[in-house]
Length: 67
Image (cartoon, rainbow, N blue to C red; front, top):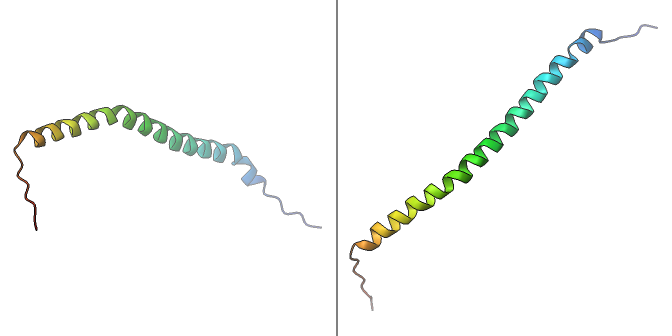
C-alpha cells in the first residue's frame, strides 16, 4: 500500500498558526481601539451639536400657520 502523507505541510503549521493569530489579534485590536476612540469622542460630538443648537436658537425664527 502506498501512503500519501503531507509532511511538508505539517512543517508549516506553526507559521500558519502565528499568521492566523496575528490576523485575529489585529481584528480585535482595531475593534477595541475604535470603540475606545468613539467612546471618548462622543462627548465632543455632543458638545458640538449642543453649540450648534444654541447658535441656531439665538436667531429669530418666524412661524406661520396655514389655513
